[in-house]
Image (cartoon, rainbow, N blue to C red; front, side, top):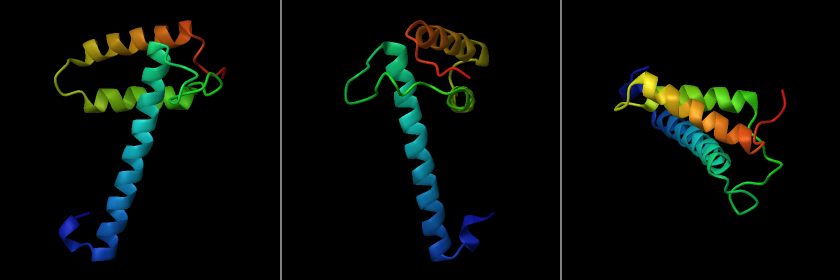
Length: 95
């Protein structure tokens, strides 16, 4: 939809939804990074807040979508490394 044709209220609503989505993605990225690096039981994440299969899929899609500098193959290698680190720390919820 063309943003110039939206009403002021529609623009505010769209901005709010975009902000909420960005906040949600940010929280997911922090959770993944915390499990990957082992920063647990602090202010960031708790051991019982494991990564769900749905969250992992969303994270992979997000990372592949935003990567502009690295090749998809390199991003996939990093994803594999991240997956293995989280798995080693017991950070994935059982499906």
